Length: 311
Image 1 (cartoon, rainbow, N blue to C red):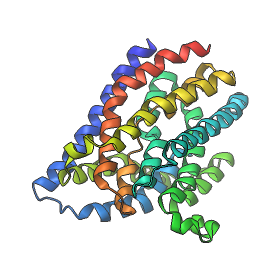
Image 2: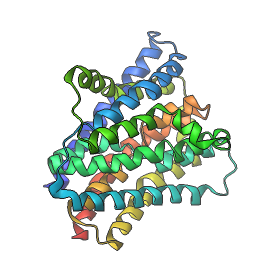
Image 3: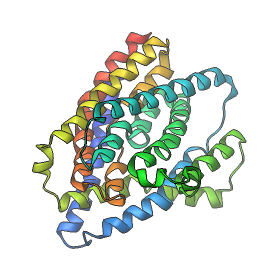
Image 4: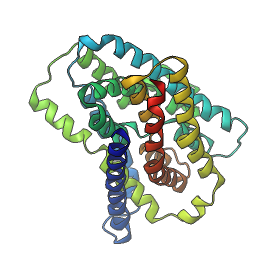
């Protein structure tokens, strides 16, 4: 039953993402949008939409009855995320290509929020979503600290704390944690605009990806060994490492399933956005998002088959 639901939900999520990418592609091809608009959209996404999505994800009720599982989820989530970063750094340490930072980012960070959360909600309900939110906390902290240091190494050489304090998304993580841990009620008049802005995250990311594809030579990208390195590590090696880590720590059941499935998701949709923001190969960034999302139709159900082995 788990595998059947997972296949159906994954296929539906992938189809939605590709339709959104198609809209962005056609908008540029039909001259509705200028190809350069992706830079303005990227700035809007990173500085307003993503912070709103992060804050919105923390506006949920805290259940003290499952506190022990929350602690375990926190520890395992941190472990698999750091392990994923270690895999990316280890396999690219001898690479001298100028796009190495983008490649490392694409390998390390999954599309957990959009691809993962609907799967977790459908398969495990509210409790599963709570564990997913804990994973998302560490994911957001890592993406806006280590992820930014990878993509913008010059900035990381200066006052790192000052640079991080300027990141709207990291400020949103801090605000979200205060709201969640303090169970501070947010008035509907404020919560609704935050929710609406946050809901723009995936559509806007996919529109940007489509706009990049409209001006790209994807055939050249597909033939690139760098893309295949990203796909193999992101879609096969990192999920395998996550599974082994959960197995070694005795993390099974719902907690193990949630963490593994979130870490097994395709490349983060924001990869293509950061390729634009930080002036890396935009075609490679878009290609990684599209190709890994397509592959997830096959790899996520395979991960679901392995989850019961943990007991």
